[in-house]
Amino acid sequence: MKIKIVLLSIALLSSASLAQATSSVEKLTEKHQQENVERTRQYAEKVGKPAPQIVDYKYGMKIDVAKLIHTSRDIKTCGNFKKIMSYEDSAGNLNAVRYTLQGECVNQR
Image (cartoon, rainbow, N blue to C red):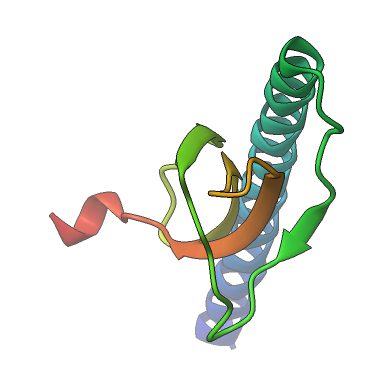
């Protein structure tokens, strides 16, 4: 009976830690995405062009990067996270693409 209680306690604590870690990754992702939006907006204002709408990347999507404006920072995590790349295409239009990147887990080194 004691073993069941101990195992149940470990399981509950593990799931709580995972939920907290997921929450912190989501908060960092949101923070980095907001930084990207702000930097892209400032660049657009500086060059007199409209700020782009963020488009979610889809497999096979053509991306024409003539000039990289900004990419959101990486997050140290064992899971996946979202990044945004803002760029100017060869026609001079500003674009922003959100994509999923696999995190680099510290334990994988």
